[in-house]
Image (cartoon, rainbow, N blue to C red; front, side, top):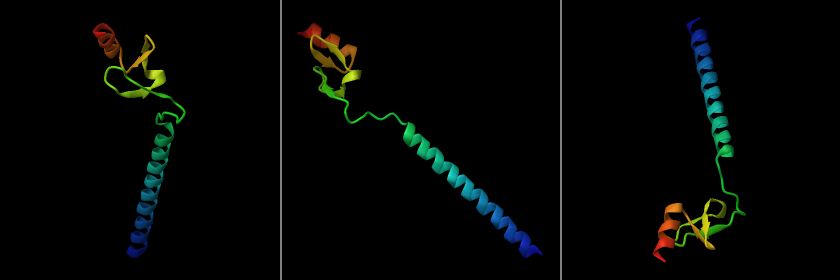
Length: 80
């Protein structure tokens, strides 16, 4: 009788571990799908002040030049 109970407990624990593993895999897959990725066709531009490359939609453009931040745009344009 105790053997049957022991086997049932092992089966329940195994089932719970399997469900937990499946849940983690599902959440991991959802996280990978929802993570913000820059598409490969996004053009990268170089900051005129520090040389950092940033995606064009995120860059600050002033006077035909690109900058990674408003601070760098102001510093560069007041310097020149």
